[in-house]
Image: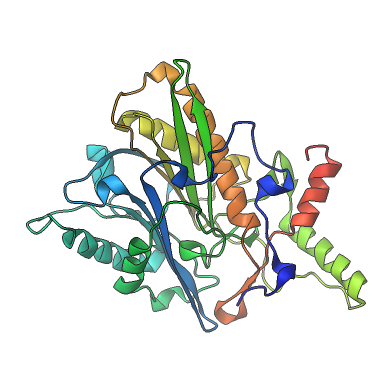
Length: 366
């Protein structure tokens, strides 16, 4: 169950005046600002114990027989089950959509993704395919051992993938995740990339946030325990109820991974995309990640641009755009998530946006 009613309204960090960096976002401020990239979700919110799902990033160019795109991978910490990683690194391409889910459902998702690709028109004689499936551990809020994801859920997310605005927060693979002591989920953002020769492009990012540390917004640290205590106390004063911590669960979970997907319409090769993916993982630190040893921190970057490649000397703006897009996507994955109660009554509370905004304003950064 999640917060009901108007009081649960959530806002992107940009709407609160807390956007990171100064580069211009794309029209949607989403990974779908990269033409030909679609996103679909299937959210599993069953009873009191299942809070999980599927998020599919579907580039048009791999959603057909024989399609592939240049891609790169960077592993910040390899405590995860990223299916398809070795072939991605070896060949520098992706040849399927990228699917995200919960840890113990990753293998079922991969099998469903293989079935999806075998069924694509023109693939009737396909004998090998490399499904790319990432995961984070949502076992605090969801009964992860039940492995509730079915092929139908995966196929629904793939079939429902659309361009345009992307649903964020407690949706798809973010239904049961938590980060930095708060409820988290799926977030996305983009940045326009002007280049010296007058041409430019777009970098878009999508994240599945589920990692530990202390939330940091524009350099200001927001301790989850203090923020939720302060919010609970303020609510109690306003309603005349008794005060408390506002927490029915520990505020700081162990690191349980982050999956970052970066797309660009610039013409980058696999080596350059590996460098972009590295900067995407670096951006976790700016939002407060403690890079816990039990966290699988991965970034996959792919390019849809056909010409090129771009000169290495021109990558600076791409790196900067990547860092900003990933940072904003992570923050939106938190600020758009809602308080969620799940498995065994465990609770993860939403970021108290008013408290964060007031703290940043007091520090002179909002």
